Length: 321
Ligand code: ACO
Image 1 (tube, helix red, strand yellow):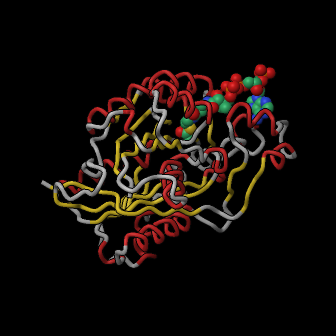
Image 2 (cartoon, helix red, strand yellow):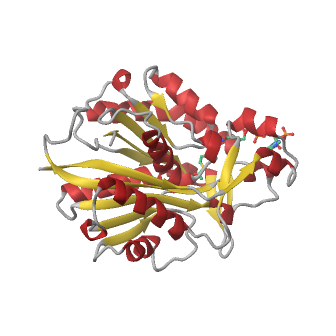
């Protein structure tokens, strides 16, 4: 039986920083309102000619270099995105071609803000089944393409970026200092009766829309038990978590979930403050930034939890690369 382990992470953000004051010059809002309701201070916005595939490739290239692997070693590429404009070729195929991966399986996966953690589970299952040895799992979004820049209730929330993980198959028992067997079992599901609470709808120019209060109530009332179940299935006590990286939608949601969990020792990702809501990119982006800054201990158990459109969720405990 094989286990899997995240061996390296990488991320990419566009250069342009859009501040709350910039937005206040565009719509009827203020820095104070945005900070108080969401925690967001800035977000990154891609250039017109900077695509989801560009950002995904940049993040994946960094993860690959950090893993010490060659493109030819990668035999599976999965990109979680809901904002890639082209239906085909997939963003994953474009990333594989640009990196020079030899002949990997490649596909895109759309599960909105739960996309990365869903893709990580799918890749984990593929590697455990022996269908691949080294996978690139990427979350990449250009939400600015799907934003109504005249709607103050949504345009202040979103940002662009990408994060990537290299996932490798390892023999059981060789997963390093944390004790955890690499990537823990996924806890995933959805509430399809509430699917329309977050929408990216429209034939040629889809626009992001949501029932913000309903999603807020749902997130703050359902996610903590899901996180606890992910810890239980991984055999990790909540108190022993070294890090918590949830989807970065709203600082108040993050703080509420962490408070309910009682995880006082864990380093908590709060990248929403700098990056806004980057949908499927937010978990790997925030995770990669924490690792790059040296805020997490290699081998420490880290809870990942994606949630959002669907309404869907997927979470697992992983050992920190
Ligand atoms: N600036 C100033 N006022 C604003 C703004 C703004 N940017 N946006 C809305 N308002 C006003 C509203 O018009 C309303 O005014 P009114 O009382 O006169 O009608 C008032 O502020 C309150 O609006 P609410 O929508 O009730 O504000 P709320 O406190 O709920 O905050 C928010 C909105 C931030 C969207 C919050 O509901 C939220 O974070 N929800 C969760 C979103 C989420 O987690 N989504 C995850 C999935 S996203 C994905 O999958 C891509």
